[in-house]
Length: 424
Image (cartoon, rainbow, N blue to C red):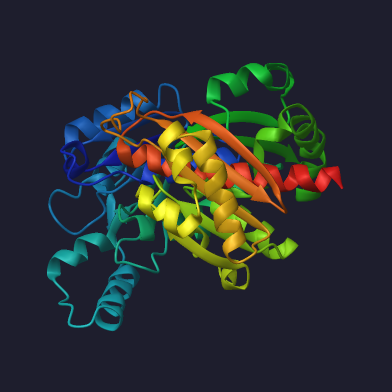
């Protein structure tokens, strides 16, 4: 099965709304092992949508259209789909009653307009998909070896309908099941990672592997097909183990599609590690300005191990709060390996924490007057008396440098804890 996605709506072309439907559908279809050949956006124009369908069916056998199912004159998707297949529009009283029921029971004060009756007209020979979250029913229209699937434009309605009605429909056309695992990498770019695992990428047919660049990290999707979920996971396991052996130092999380959808998981991974190992932590932040601590407190139960988070931005604060030697700052500067080392030792000793993090650097947009470059960052970690200081050269805006420094610091602590455990 080859699919093309068509989004209908002039508001999308004008940039008035962000089209999240195609990203969601592409990901879901990939998980089902279905090829998405193309994505197209068409305005509310009858002739242009007809042309888009004609073009799409030259390479695809299934078209999924989102949007254009509303009650107004510019909602054209139903009529165009019917016209393309040469089908008549048929009125369904049952659909009309469902629309009335939804508007009167689910939308307080909603007015049932005669315009809504338009949504009760559907092409003949259609499979009607119930909309539990809106008024517009979805439709599956088939003719010979071609099919058009019409879904509502609002993402909440579209997702619910796709998951409850369309996925089961697609599974009828395949005797295989598809399962995906997602691996998140940190500390290596997409190109560098691709070179390191090129032999693995090139040799796989089942499971298949796909790399995606995300903000500050890389995501790898591993998808296997089989007769059942257990067989799929059995096929994936040797590949995942090979990746762990070859680039395991960059892997910080392996999981299902929820791992792929979340923007960042590093703070949760580190917080969970601290809780599981019962390691208390203190944090001293300069350029990150509290980002590390604020991310950790998102984790439920972190109060059991998080002693304190301090923003020590000025030299005076570093000296008086953390006990940094004034001579160290005078000789090496606030942004230096030596200052970072004294910061992390100082914050760890304040409350006798098991582990600690300290950050100092230049986030920009200008330097600190010492000719040190913007993006120069020193991160110090402390684990049971052992101190590790790393230097980084980060790029981007002031905000991006701070955010990347925060995530990098958490990853450095994660690796430091793992290294200390291996030495035992």
